[in-house]
Image 1 (cartoon, rainbow, N blue to C red):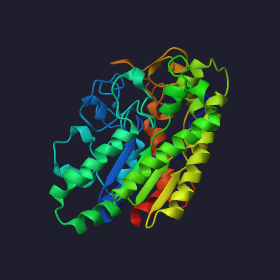
Image 2: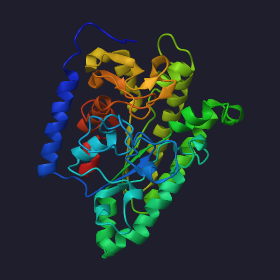
Image 3: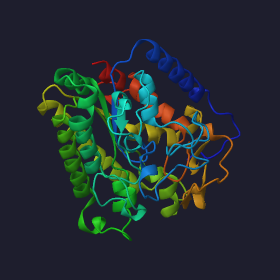
Length: 370
């Protein structure tokens, strides 16, 4: 794995950022393709919900958000924007607010809502070592409350409300914690002693499918489901497994097994749920290629956290007011677990651009335009 190089990084990231800006401005001006976006997930998507619950999994302190346009850290687990933030730009939308920040029947719900919660998993038990979090099942309950009790106040006409929900885009990105903060923590959970890797992946996929059907029943028709990235390549797993080169392949194999079940689930849902369109975001392959060939994408450091402690910056994550690296756009990882804004920009662009096949059977942009 490349760590540092005396050569300058390629201009790829600069090009991607330019395209992100252009596409975002174009869409904001001309082509909002969906009325709103609703987000379910974990810390890869959380933009502030955990600020409102007693949780150890928070990012509402500097240097988190150091490169964002916000005046204070918002709770995003990055130095800047997340993948959902970029997705909203592509759709000409404002990034939906964290649900727990909203007053009842807030007009801001007309741009959607973000229910994601750091440390949350598909399973209720996942992440309990961090205190409070909002598991997927509870996130779906909050959405159901939004549809049945809050949105009807803002959109009283039932037909108009149904059209609003049907036309909105739903992003679901969850499952990583079920591995790195559950299955791969035998000191805290017995899941790895209870289930084989294949059986655990199926357990997760089945529960995810169950929750998706509840969201569908509430009116969602356009859903983008993100696969899990190469977990064995994040600084936390490199440090925890004493990796000297490459990635922790056991963790990567677990992620691949889950992704295979998720793809099968998406195919089945597209075939069986009328009027629906489900899109798979193949984060794993793109992310792994970037880890293996960072300079091709403009990165110089592919195995260390920009802000962290210990080996690879992965033994203890970024702490309040800890100095971060200076050249953040050249790092893949912001902290022990999460990508930098630079990597988030590339991952999002590849899905919504639609030319690389990172999202299929259609691109994120095509999904929004339906």
